[in-house]
Length: 39
Image (cartoon, rainbow, N blue to C red; front, side, top):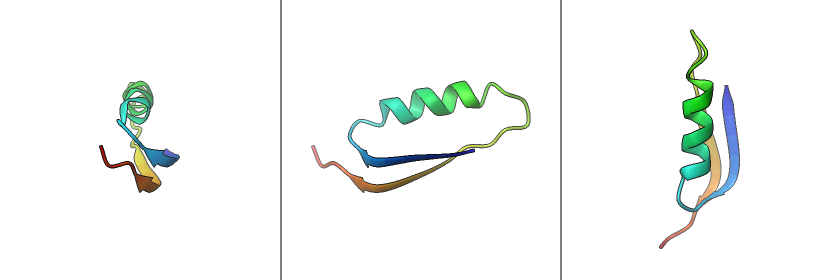
């Protein structure tokens, strides 16, 4: 599964999504983003 996001701010949405997907057996998760917000 490839999760795509335009900007990662805290990463909490991607983390929650990845955790839910990883509950499915034999599933892997990759993440693609364009930018990361600097805090």
